[in-house]
Image 1 (spheres, rainbow, N blue to C red):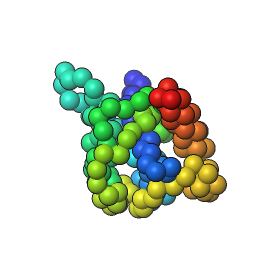
Image 2: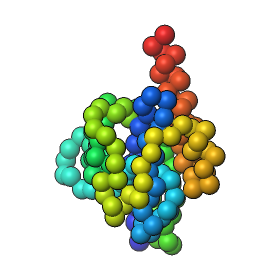
Image 3: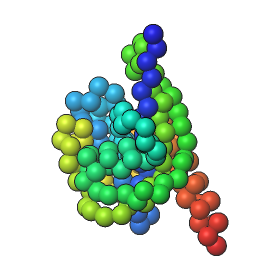
Image 4: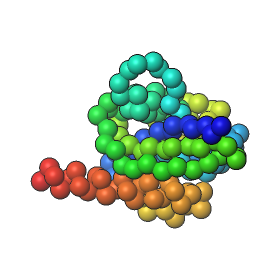
Length: 149
């Protein structure tokens, strides 16, 4: 039987930079690589906005900051882990609300930085899918800016 995991990530933008973590070397998937903050959706019963609440929870657990509840969908992808675990990944553009980011969850996060898109794209630890997610998030940011003007 095929198994699906739903994963969400927050593309958090502030002052021209993206919040990026270095995944712990202990992580089974993409250990030691740069990543957006995120994690698996957990069962919560019959509630709404589970994806957005999961982003907020994961960001707080991993890097100790709060993001606003209003988020903008960026894109979704799928990938497999091993032979039988299928992951659906959804990226949301998030706005920083409060707190200073730090590596709160040492089991999951080895480092935290605010980086420009160019810095991330040039970093050898940045996987292609991260660069693509941020390219798309930058497009969404631009569309939002144009809609406001």
